[in-house]
Image (cartoon, rainbow, N blue to C red; front, side, top):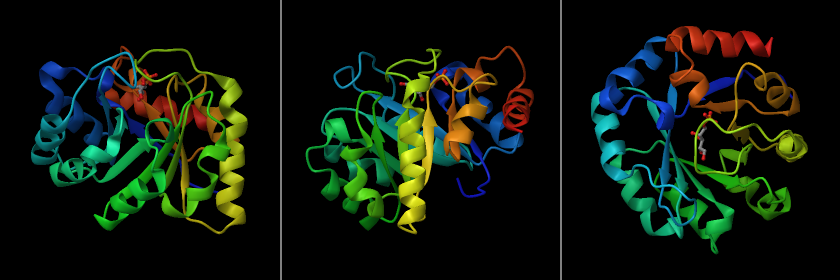
Length: 222
Ligand code: DX5
């Protein structure tokens, strides 16, 4: 793994939606630059969460970058809408995207960062031919749909393979992990090659301040 700084990307799924802007601003005050918004449609994953209004609201009320993770069927239908709503990063799942190359190309045409995500049972081969079109490859370390699930360590070789492919091909893409990231798992994910670690419950529902939760995660990497 090349020497890369590690970015903690809090997922708002576990944030307090009764005071979401305040909670996100707390993360920003703790040095967080990007938060992840988990969009779920109840079809691609067995849960329904948030959509365009939340992206618009956070874009208007905070200064953090918005990494929008589309866990929805046929995400290509909403790429332009989420870009217009304020997404800075838009990640689509290969399992939901029959035309992944076209979707990633469109995201980049719109001037925002593109991410391709793979679920725990999806091999890296599913996205290896589009790594030149992504700013991040998201390796799910849980089966998507809910926060607070257990980390799946057997996906880590996929993190390492993708990191190696980005480096071998001199591509700028980063490997992002998402799900079950906490003080007990983040070091293994970073050691495997992740440079972006999405954490929901470990940041927003850890029973401590966001600032303490973030610094505990960073300390656990060292
Ligand atoms: C799971 C979501 C994750 C989730 C992470 O489907 O994509 O972003 O919010 O939550 P934790 O960090 O609690 O596992």
